[in-house]
Length: 436
Image 1 (tube, rainbow, N blue to C red):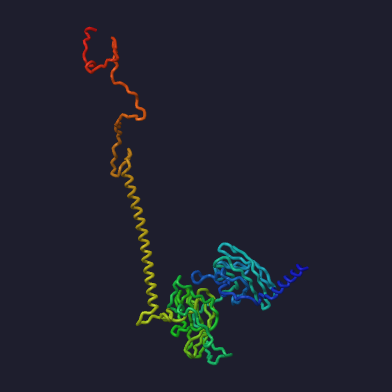
Image 2 (cartoon, rainbow, N blue to C red):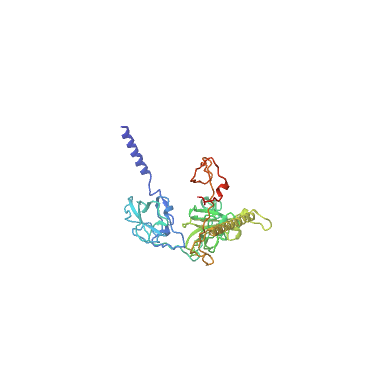
């Protein structure tokens, strides 16, 4: 009975949790929707490809003029703003409230369906679709939505809409309720992004709203296209129009995204107001392009932090810091050169020692018959000499040999008297043998 009750409670909790969550109201708006259309072909080198291997898995809604439907046929490589488009290998739900499990395919350069996985798709009562997307496992791959590409390039200045908002509606005045833009000193049009020194500013993470640049001499957005890799980012965003000139005046102008090949690859509108205190506030929208950022300030001084601005009459911390960095760079270069010189000298010394050792070894060797020396003259044949051996008598100390008389044996025909010693005269005297 106890276990049955627990099972019933668990089923009720699951049912209530499912009922409490509604994907049609709990979703996130998809980024870069205008670039995800099938007809949007990626221009390599002009902009970074969409890469959904950084996408956070969850429910998403597509709000784009190109459409919200995921294509059900292979789009082709380098489509949908990415290298490897992800498309739906099936059909979309058609009945309100219907939720299906669909299979998506990643298209490669040679195969229409290199990888597959499943996602959930639901048709909501507001006549729109939501997708439960899973993070891709492949770099430079992205989900496709919509068919026709949205043309966002505008080469002519937009028409400004000027209004006077000295009397704010509903008590809201952007001149009093704004946020300070981040990285002010890095957003100057004269500031070049040094790869590896700083991370590129990326205003696709910017929270949309009213912003102010606090430095009065650097608060104006440039009205001409900066170069790529300026304003502390890869793709600078500049004002394709004019700033308001009358205090209290608010205008709507077009901003452009500068790419490597086009001065205005994408554009959208922002509101700008000149406040009574003689400063500007900008109603900025988050960019749809990674590594892109809004530009503010055109003077060289805008590329330097305000508290580090160099004075013409005195040495400042900025100058000291800059000189210190230069000295460090010089020391690093000198150190690297010194290490290279030491390594080269060590190698040369090792080679020299090896050659010297080889010469000494060869000079001590006996020349071999038939071989030619360095001068090309054959050495004389080796002649073996007779060896001389110094024969010395050896004395055996342990057991000397028995004494042997050196006196010669005498054979006598006559009587031999052993007691008689022979003298030298007796031995060598010539005897008369006539009587014998």
